[in-house]
Amino acid sequence: MSALRTMRPDEVKAVLERHHGLLGETASSRALRYAVPLGMVGLTIFAVWWLAIPFGQIGPGLALLGKFVALMFPPSTGGHLDLLLKAMGETLAIALLGTLTAAVVAVPISFLAASNTSPGALVRFAIRRCLDTIRSIDALIWALVFVGVVGLGPFAGILAIAVSDTGALGKLFSEVIESADERARESVVASGGTSFLAVRFGLLPQVLPIIAGQVLYFIESNVREATIIGIVGAGGIGLQLSEQIRTYDFDQVAFAIIMILITVAIIDWISGKLRFAIIGRRAVV
Image 1 (cartoon, rainbow, N blue to C red):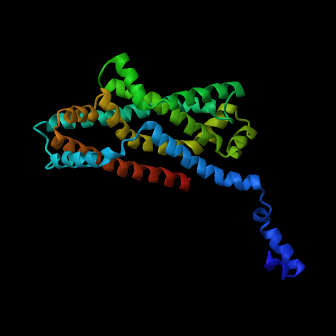
Image 2 (cartoon, one colour):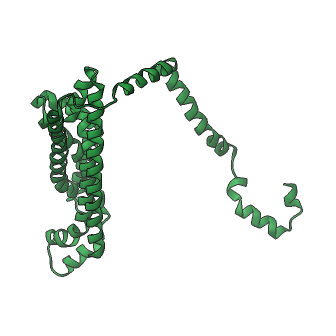
Image 3 (cartoon, rainbow, N blue to C red):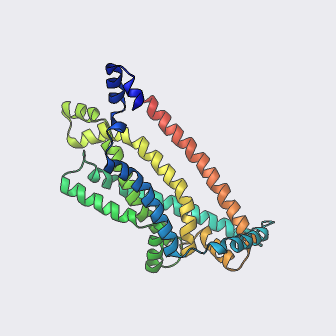
């Protein structure tokens, strides 16, 4: 404040205008600014106390983890290479079929959920809430449900991924549709086309490349998801991993993990090339 007294009135006015937000801050706003981080720290401390996290077990746990890692070397098939390859193939099939099923179901649903293509606000609201409900339940929970419904095996995994991804893809597709340029649709309607033709020729060419890119990404992601849900009996390499961990065959666990890493890397490379080709073609068009 002493520096302000030595400045000319016009300079004082300029400083006050430039820093009005800081100089005009009230006591309540300052208290709120400090209360939020302090509240987060307090909640963290309370959560640690309430959950009774045993920090003393970290050291022995790391030592035991070191023993498990040592048992993984050298990786070995245990004479079950054909079984592991078949399980990996099942995982890929579960991810592919589950994602494609979800995409086929999510595309028409997304048009009902998008504000610019939905037949009414009530329909849009109902579809959105259904997608939120489906998406809020993890694929692992859906796998447990479908294992009880259709039994153990890949079919339960396909259904779990299909249902779970329908909620996620439906929301993503509807947002893509809502962000599409309306001028193409308006041009079709102005030329005498119907609403269906406006969507077919004015909207779909814009959104299909983006939708295809999202589907490719979900296929890649669902290879990892299929591995996890296989642990609860939904087939694939996850089921083999669960059995090998249960029997302490960590050398075979290491080999299965290496197979998963190589497979995911290959799929990531292929899907990246396909997404680039799709986006590049869209940019040219």
